[in-house]
Image (cartoon, rainbow, N blue to C red; front, side):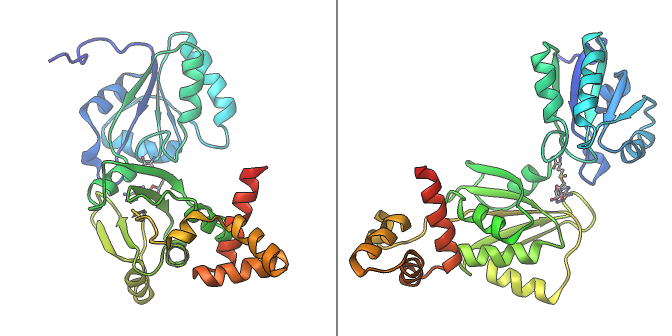
Length: 290
Ligand code: SAM
């Protein structure tokens, strides 16, 4: 076995994944590295201390979160240049994935410091592999925007080719997000919610978005969740597929003498889409042309 477990730990930056709920998901290698580094930089030192106490690891910690990432990165890079062995951990899961870690990885590479991934739990991949949705092609988006308009724009921009889109979502926003998914993709869009992964109340909700909205109107769902969907290409008439909204608006303005917004409203109605969706598509096309 080509294990390096008997070797002293090499100097460098260790990006160490920790469990997303179930402590058994810590790896043997993660434990060895956390025990052997000089310092553990944590998103929340109190949170990580619970993990360290559980595994009886007594290594000094330092905070490393989105508010001090910039200054702390410089300090840690200095230590690394001096030959330190430093681990980065987030509150749960894989550092750098919707969590701090990416910035110091980039800085360490630029400074010529060795960097070691120590893989383990991750909510997005755990949700994906048990979702039943395609796993051969997927995109991870992190959190959707909190504001409705921006969220709809983000959803409308998703590639619709049957590959899977993965999001992190908060329980207090899930109903609004499902409403937007229904507006953009229609009530029959299949959606998966992977909730409380690896924990006692782990649950998968797999249904159409309309069914899920009915389910969630009758019960509250709490806890952490991953949202997944794999939209198929929209079945649009050939004429619609060929003509962009901007082209159709401009043609209608010329042929029917309509103002831009009136032309847009008529095209939205003809295509069976909402006015705001048509407006956002028009803006996107116009921005692309600038
Ligand atoms: N770095 C982490 C990872 O590797 O998965 C993700 C950190 S991100 C700040 C936290 C979000 O991940 C949660 O709001 C939730 O959407 C998702 N998440 C984390 N743990 C989860 C779990 N046990 N089950 C479902 N989703 C989870």
